[in-house]
Image (cartoon, rainbow, N blue to C red):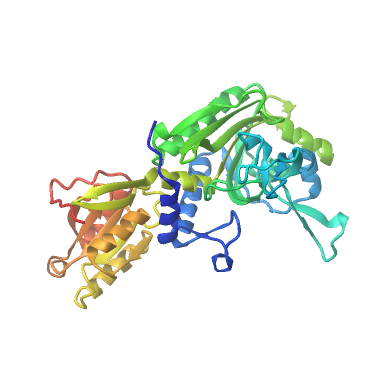
Length: 448
């Protein structure tokens, strides 16, 4: 079994390097709420964009959608969330802390070993009021998932996109669940961002497409750098399947607290469209003109969380090694996910180097996400870039003023190559796309 990274190291790194901060920290924070800093917001955006690229832009059978967080309350009645979206809650009779009953190893309080109350079902949806007067008729909910917005727009999207089945509708966005217990950093929070695809297929072909999407989604994580030995597929037993699901697999990741769900892929059958058709009185069917038949499509749903994916990518990329007697912490993020692609570092703040370093920075800015750093020693600046996962550093030195060449340093191998400034954009673009960092034909060194 692969060695697990200590979660405290990741939390410390995220605070120190501007990935994730406690929300409202100057007021003591708010439990399970987190703010993404300058590096974190870029990483989170890159994870979301990589998913969108793979699921929407690189396919001709999926379109996108962005639905309202607030929806008609009958949506959640029809979907079963009002009556059935619950977890068993118990409360300690001594310290009054509350816990999910199904997650306790023993029927005693984990905090003080006190006696617990009998379980009662607790609805996880956040209620709010729409309009100037708080009355029962104005009660709505913050969405607990993005999927229902897709289902209620099925007819709109089919009509306007003119897509034929099989086809998918993808959506990313915030969802809210009033979880009884949260924790493990950004693994489980009450406000989170989802990556959801509803893939509509003809009944009878759903088994084939279910298998397809299980493999497709597993391979996506591997392609973006997560080691296969840190991933596993786990099929849900019949006793744990959601009421709407015909079948379901979890893609689990080996988090510091053990194997836990990273993404779920479910065969939802025709439950959702059928329920909304009954509740709304609108016919939600697909007409196949070529076969001259109508049917309610079945749905395959790959559903992941941006925040949980960010955590997995950070954990898997985190590494410590010894370089010339010193410990180096490096985050080996896939270039597509790295917050900063290239850092421009003048050898020093010498006034002779600054103009050329700034010129190189301006040259690269239109093509890449760039950082410019000239504070402290070059070695310390390399270390900062290593810890935020920057794949390449470009160093401008005094020799650069004469030969118009700069040094590119590779984050992972620490190899360096010297290249002409005029070819810098082309070379960096190739390296970021995966071209080998071969320094043998030029020169290579390992520096602190």
